[in-house]
Image: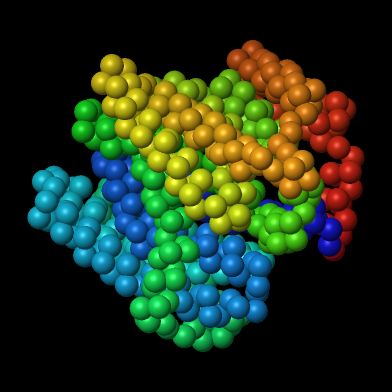
Length: 486
């Protein structure tokens, strides 16, 4: 396969896995909002946001480090996985102990919030057994699809049987944990089959090596998660669970989109690793430029389409009584565009093992968020939280761009990456997206098309115009066709 065909195959499988996961999650979140109400849903959202910090502590950035190392030398997968698993296992138990201490001894959460946090406290230990990074590095992404499907199916089944029928919020958390356990168990079983029985390595030398080489990625990931979750935290402090519910409702829809963004660089890691290993800067420049084109080609129309359909989306999915979520969604959608560019820049620095740049970029974004997020929320409430989302992503994008340019300073033209965007092509995508949004709004408002028909119409109009104006090339379609035939 060509590099582009490998990319399409990897990305397609990761997209399928993520689509399955997010479709299940979307249905589940719709049920939770409708059956439990916006306030308890807000508490549910805070519990998952809170626990995300500790799953990061358990991982400590070793997943992206492990994926990169294994992608460069697949024969070393067993040793790398064993070393990382040993370190992560200890950190996971420490994370769970800290959660329990904070919930019952430090913070004075209400009974509903405390019960939720008690159940999710074991998630860091469960996630350690997933070995997601090994599967992606070995390009065996069908395993991810199977494991996620099974785990999410169990989660959804529990929601339908116990939450939908009995309105019991504890079952929502319980089956979330059971689903995660099933997903990790399946992945663990397949990884053992691929690389053999994993040998633990609790040596001080191993831990020191991982702390030096892998944990800086953990610091970057922790700051990344922190700045992304600042609106939820400050809404908890300065507002109410109800407003967290509205923000989290819109945020889940945005996260549905953004989940696919992060996969783009992941699919290209095995490919761009070769270019980096061979110091082929022309190939690196081409790959990164193509990723940027891929991102804005599909994210710009998503933003415009979401803008004209936001009210229909919220009304159909969650109910007309939660229409406030549509206005929040209108604002937050634009963060995906900046997020897409940041994912390319950040992914490139990750493959380069440039820990310093990753930490600097996330620290600057986090520091900016600490000042702007509470200010916006104080004056504008939940709308302020929504505004802070694209603001944070814009800061991250600019910071990463500057840091990549700085890496090429004082180097010859042949020894640095060149970032380029075809302005003419970008303008075409923008124009096509505006035209597509106009027709979608006309179909929705004047012809009363339902949401599904509007989305299908928008996709078809966008694809038709993209091929006509050349923003999706015939070469792209040929590559896709060859890959599908294989």
